[in-house]
Image (cartoon, rainbow, N blue to C red; front, side, top):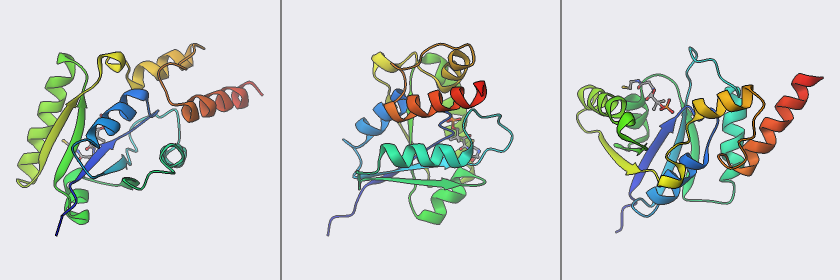
Length: 165
Ligand code: PNS
């Protein structure tokens, strides 16, 4: 019997970018199924609410049965234990990501020795994209059309319109 290879791709996804999409697409060349898990992070000031972010990611992947959109509260390792998947997928854009990623991977391993973090190097086309950069560009009125999926761009425009009212 073939057992599906499943990975958890966790993040804050505020907003979800073409870089995230690229990591998921390429992750599916290695894994049969990817669980995109949105972290509840109450301390962060976000551009999209938690519900909006879940809705956006679900809309992007509505026709894909090998991509499951879920969320979790608390520690990622506890979530991974709960759903019975011990592989975490992360994107690595550049050397500057390395320190943070290494720290997180080692902390997760210390918390739960079964956990394995697998890195995919983000395509160079998207390596300059980060959610924080997008938030800044948006706050200054710039276009992020080339950096985010169409659904996200549309939702950002709606948000800007609502603000102007
Ligand atoms: O998109 P991000 O902000 O890089 O994702 C970071 C995330 C959500 C994966 C990380 O902050 C996380 O795992 N948060 C859950 C809380 C937790 O387990 N913290 C310890 C990880 S070292």
